[in-house]
Length: 589
Image (cartoon, rainbow, N blue to C red; front, side, top):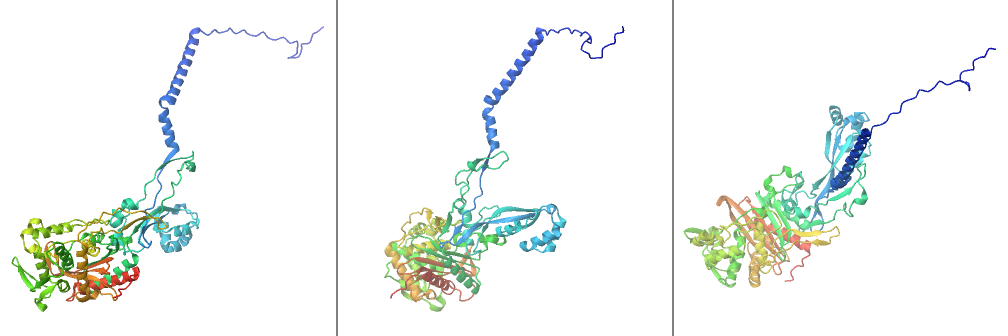
């Protein structure tokens, strides 16, 4: 019988025997090596963890913190400056620079130019040409307002880039430029209060460390409360904008009429030294300071020296009264012309009036007699007179809050005492020099009962509601003259306006005191031939003084250019403005 072979894979198929694999035995040395490697690796890892967590932990945590936090210092606008009535004199405004990148335009260049032109005030053809000539970084305007930028953004054009910055704006242009000054392109004060009051005008710089998220955005929870809110303080001045404008207009008209080189007009409250008006001409537009002569940046009423001439005579009479070498009822003989130390001294009108003979003090002032004033000063020892000039602080800067104040110039003690001509010329306001502001301060002392108050223009820091938060400390005013002396000299000055050379300053219904001055002009110690400085100082009202006014006009032209004709009419207009603004009641007598 034939036996058929079973199909492959059948249950009863016979498997081939497996080959036996000999078992390998790992040597103990290898096991030890592996364990050593593991131990070393673990040790290194542990050391690294120890280093990171313990040794380098503080440093790494500091780095992480620095990456997660950013130091913020928000831009804070400079504080505004306002006048006595709250009108803005200087303020920061947002302006924008527009950069255009034509390569990013998604519309045709002519279409973009057509949309931009009316907002920018530029020609379509000009814009098209510029866009075609440059692919990126075209600066079109650097003075765009927020409203213009809003209009541009509403166009939804690609390729426009806006750069915001602050610009100092001076709405009154040249009205306060001599006082306020200006900021340069780097926002640094270069003149006036913008320079001298940097600490008051610049808000305190705030800094805060703020946390940010992984994408770099700031987390608001970390911003300190009130950090992004600025104070609403503003620097208020004592100046009255209405009086400042009236004074500037009156002075300009007179300078033009007499073709004068320059002029200054000042108004001070004699009770505390606050300045209500301070005008210097010529001046400049503070918004366009770069077009101005740099010489105009220093207010010459505060900075420049001049010889006061006859406007100093009331001061000299006050000194003589205080020294008891003069009595208010004294009579002084006026020869019209005298010789002092070989030098001739005569009255300004000697050629027409000659000598006037005996004069009372009111007449000395009314006629502005140089000869009589020399006789009065001769009653004092030169040493004592020199000490009085020092007591008046003529050679020291006025302690004002205005920058670049200059001290006056007087001769040395030896020269003044040993040369008789020096006290003689000083008797009628020549041979020494001071600033207009200093002369006004001295006349304020006569008007207020003898106290030397400090001229100032800063009232303090106020909020938007006018609430005063801070005001600068004022030095105590020293007593220069007695109240009796001040009253007597004021009476003499009132007679000048009532019956003397000050008549052109009269204001109907009001008592005004004053003194004219017409002096030779000196430059570098030498008198300039034919050049003169005319001036007038006034006090309103004479019976109860509140305001001192001074007008100085440098080099007026014409044969009739005197203190009475050039300066006094300007003071008249200033006084009339004060009467209206302050509501001063007319005199009942």
